[in-house]
Image (tube, rainbow, N blue to C red):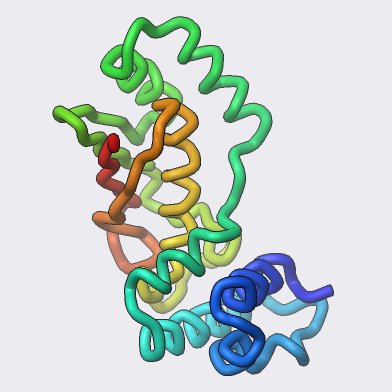
Length: 182
């Protein structure tokens, strides 16, 4: 079995765009070893994202990268549900949820939320073990954006959209997302 994150990338491409495009965007998949050093994984991830940037439009990239994003942990779901039960509205929830995210935050402005993770380090499984790496395309971080959409759809009990404002893996100082409540 291939390294799970690469399996998910290949699977997402294949499901959205078909086998031929999956092979074109990720020709290394069929020969991937079961283990790779973190630095080599980061280089391969960057190469795949560069190919996606070259061959796909932004909407397709977002669809592919968000398709199989990370789920919330059981602990995160329990914390969110507990907070939702205690808070009278989304404004109060944002204040309380910000305490869980500290040093990150959630700020509400009308029908928009700004979410900052505040870690100043990428927590993605691809990069968290690396002290240094070459910044990658925002295409990589669309997966995290999918996680944010999943999280805040659950929090708000409605469909939301999200736009990445900044990401550590892309050379930013923080991971910041602008969420629109639809």
